[in-house]
Length: 208
Image 1 (tube, rainbow, N blue to C red):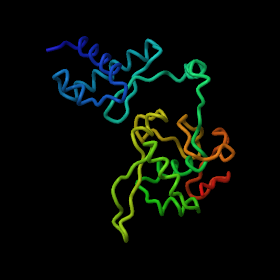
Image 2: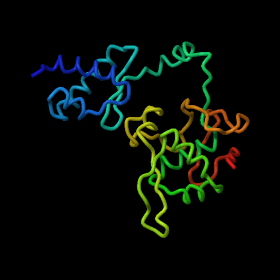
Image 3: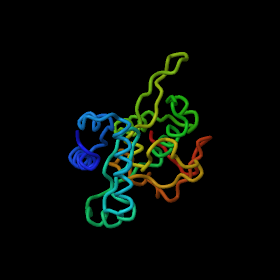
């Protein structure tokens, strides 16, 4: 039986090798301990990284943990990665993503109604980026597909769970992702975005 120090060391190695979010239960099974004990040790390890102000941190995403970089190092990392071209989500994609995040589970028809414009192509793009996914079907005529956000959404926006979503009037910014096919002249400065999920945003967005 491994001691606590050895298990946390093993967790570090697994996080480094795994790359993607590491499920707590999977890590627990590998170390032959129960999930609750594994969760306690992961939190201790994450706290140790935070207190030491390390260049990498450990973040929880639902029932998983992953190595991430601290926000204060973002500019340095960005400079290292240039001249890699970074493209952002279009305003249309941001609007739809905000609606799904705050209204989920939600149907395409309900999204269309809120935006006042059809969103088929934008929804397909967000699904392909794994930011939203199908969450079943609504018990109504036609049984339309229900959409919700994914763990990829949480990871890229830096949330541990949906409980950490900001108040809607405070939602600003956009994560860096690959282009969604919307022309550059239709993209907007994320600092100018203000979402209103009760209706349309102030800016124009037309994906058709």
